[in-house]
Length: 380
Ligand code: FNR
Image (cartoon, rainbow, N blue to C red; front, side, top):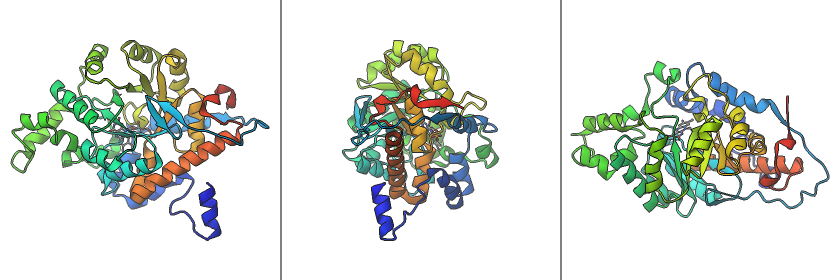
């Protein structure tokens, strides 16, 4: 914040707006209709995507005064990872449709800010290349659990070998939902060979399609991807298999019901991510923020509860933290930054989010995320 004001003295204004809610419209002007539809769109008539945003409007912060906020510390430790602030880059696949450098740009922005990135199984770059771009930055791996168990284990081994320290298992997207913006444009990046890099580079996948993917076997490779992406028959009992093959922390992403959160803890999971995939899966589903308090109450003392779906600003993040989230993940907000400015665009978003979060807390009379609680909010 200081940097932004000081550069104003030299008549230098930021390249991108500091009100991050303005990025979506700018991204629309820059991206192709198909790429923009893929990121901005959601399931069905997008009622849940809108509800995710509206839920934040119904909570208002109640600032407290005269509390000595001269020294502040936003750092937290989540799933064994030290963070400068409780903000994480959500797993977003197929990033090359938003910027030619894709996840590599995001990984560099994350490393330069110390923010943890969660790399998607559906990334357009391999996890090894992203790890290299991320260097000594903190990174977690998001698993879309493929049908072939040997391939799942191979993904986990590769992730471990390339320095991803925690595992995020996304449960809500074992198949893609009814997404009219994509359907109306007949657009699915995967079918155009984008977002399959981690499958195609995998030794178990290659064995199944007769070697590295080339012109000769590319149709067979795509069919093998289709056959393996997502497994609708998984149940809670299958989590023991993951626990066996991953010795670091595991968080389940896509939890919306307190009973599911309890089951996650009973299955030995270290965390849950309260998320409805940004409204991209079940249209008409509850707003993710409305699901948060019940889940915190159910398992908050036994597991780390993270939150996503609908965070656009630092003030939004403050509200989710006050409702009990240990950290928040952002999806579209940084993806728009990536589309507009590559690595620098993602960095801009992260710096704005963190600076606005810090100012919001400070002006509300809070010096540490752990001091936040529901008493800082009122429902309108
Ligand atoms: C996603 N999300 C997602 N989640 C996941 O676990 N694996 C993935 O590959 C993807 N891919 C993806 C692509 C795009 C374009 C978007 C917008 C989202 C969901 C993401 O992790 C997160 O849950 C939501 O984006 C959170 O909602 P907001 O912050 O976008 O409102």
